[in-house]
Amino acid sequence: MILKIVAYGIRADEKPYLNEWSKANPEVTVTSTGKLLDETTVDLAKEADGVVVYQQKPYTANVLNKLASYGVKNISLRNVGVDNIDATAVKQNGFKITNVPAYSPQAIAEFTVTELMRLLRNTKTFDRKIANGDLRWAPDVAEELNQMTVGVFATGRIGRAAIQIYRGFGAKIIAYDVFHNPELEKEGIYVDTPEELYAKSDVLSIHAPATKENEHMLNDEAFSKMKDGVYILNPARGTLVDTDALIRALDAGKVKGAALDVYEDEVGVFNTDFGSFDKIPDERLKNLLKRDNVLVTPHIAFYTKKAVHNMVWFAMDANKSLIETGNSDKLVKF
Ligand code: COI
Image (cartoon, rainbow, N blue to C red; front, side, top):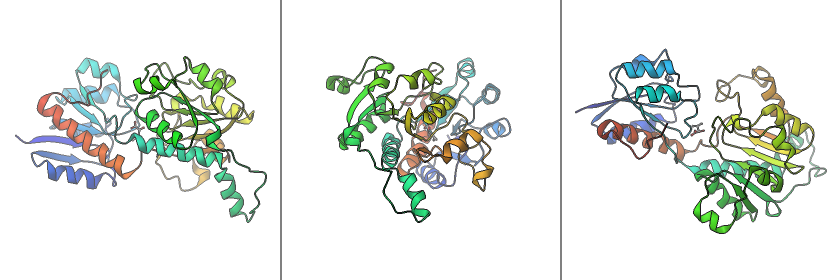
């Protein structure tokens, strides 16, 4: 039997991996489109057995209900996060949804630490000074990671990969998570509350998924409990940080530097070419982008060859497995 999978939002960098997968799986007819799954494109899935998707904009109830009305109940995400999926529509329609929980935790971890090192060594300041012909050192003397305590918020795969790298630099590690990893537990690195993590960390490295409960967990109150001069790293989800509170904390010098690979209003802005800085349509984002001690990147921590390869292959394998067996080791519970 020929299986039919429609792959949405396929970028040029994903296409070669999708073609490879297709060749290796001749019993599956793969139709791909660069367009995202929404009201205008859902009809492409009419004859499909499953769809493979990645997008940052919401998977709405309307689109999910339409898919279900076409009998398409197998959805495989090429990414980790499931926070933009209408959970009620998923449950009501009995969708089976898979994600790719570990396409490359190291990709995110390596990027996070790279950004921290850039902050600590003032590279954005030096790049600007050098571009202006100013080759002086002062006043931008750096700090060393081996003398710092890094607080890791959430010790899932990415948090643990980051811990390994921080250790290589000789940093002291503490961590907070509701779920304790048994290995890390033995090492005694867990603190009991987020507040304790805030109070003891020179660097806060955030690796939590977005939930309703942790929206704006880094708010004015949280910042007030942190050390003066703390560094904030958020490669996880924009909603975790109250951006206005962060700006206040940066202005007050409470936060000495921040690396943000995500931003609460990033959808429709990140991964877009506006042609010039002035045309970026978000004044608050531009405020952050202009600061020497803030590194904003457009959600690129994941963006490595290994990760893109795995996102395509693991999601396609999972979708095929859902179609053939009704199950997958990557099934997400809603
Ligand atoms: C995720 O996998 O959920 C991410 O945040 C990466 C995405 C930009 C592909």
